[in-house]
Length: 160
Image 1 (tube, rainbow, N blue to C red):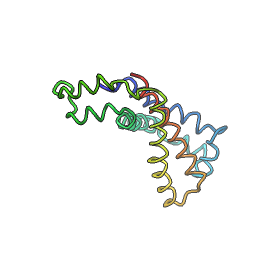
Image 2: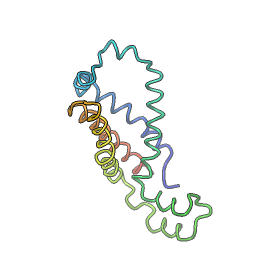
Image 3: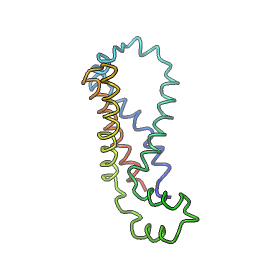
Image 4: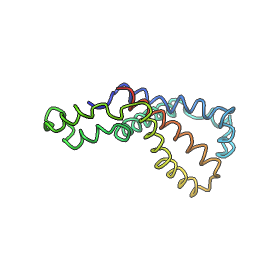
C-alpha cells in the first residue's frame, strides 16, 4: 500500500500540537480571542472531551484525505481499482519505476502547504467574509491550517 497508516495517525495529532502553540496567548491566541469574542471564562465552560475528541476524529479524516493529495502513487493505485492483488501488471511496473518518486518530507510539505493556501485558506476567507470577520481572524485561522497541513503533508508523504 502506498501510504503508512501510522503516518496518518501521527498526522492526526498535528492539529492539536500546532493548535497548542498557535493559539497560545503569546503567539496568536490573544488576537484570536479578541476577534472571536472568546473569553477565558467562556473557553473553560466548553465540553473539552467533546471538543478534543471531535478534533481528533476530524483531523483523522483530514489526514486520510490528505494522503491522496500528497502521495502521487495513490492515484496510480486508484486507477487500477484500488486493490493491489487484482491490479494489472502495468501497476507493478509503475511502482517498480516510480514507487518512491516524490516520497519525501519536503514534497509532502509542499503539497500540504499548497492544499492549505489554495484550498483551505480560500474556504476560511469566504466563510470569514460572510460572517463579517476581520482579516486578522481570517489570517490567524487560515494560517493555522496552512501550517498544520504543511506538517501533516510532510509526515504522510515522507514516512514510508
